[in-house]
Length: 236
Image 1 (cartoon, rainbow, N blue to C red):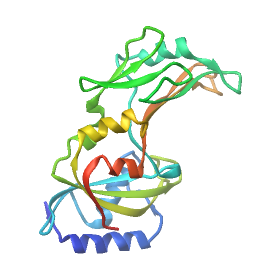
Image 2: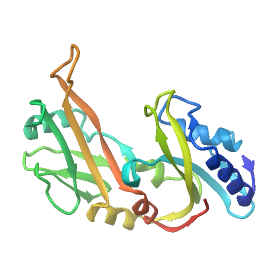
Image 3: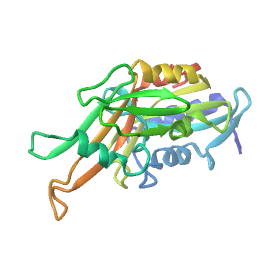
Image 4: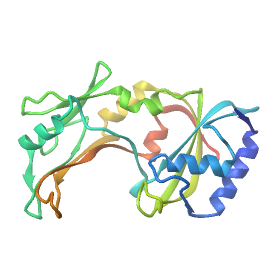
């Protein structure tokens, strides 16, 4: 484990920020974290600071309007998204069947879908008699931190996401502690945390017209994500 003062860590982050966009060191979803670790000179994703104790380092991509995708996972049981697609699909502007649906916790949406938090599950309510849910463990990355504190660094991105051409500009950093599960549940119930179901059809090639699940994303605004922790402080 690397020992470094919080003051020195912040200085290094400021230098990294001043460099602007930096090409990823790994062509993968984890490239954003690996690149930051390399730039900071940290071989592992945990570090020790004399002034803040053990800290887990995390980096997140900022999307449009400061939105974060904190998980991407289709509901279970496996294959239920295809069943849902067949029941709730509609013709899009390209004349293809689609199901692009933002699901809220406070109300039914136009496709008659709503998510509710029960028994450590996110249950997808619907009018089609389909049983579908997500276990709360899909958020394990933030719910089960390896240490009491998280240093969360946000980065703007450009280039193809998760590719060798992706670039990161690390722009903000926050020291977080004390995740509040009640606030997390409230974020769902008040529509701060939204679920985007993105199912359609291939538009070209040999698979044209065939079912294509683009992934189900859980998205939240940066400021709302920070507020599910009882304590957070901007350090960069």
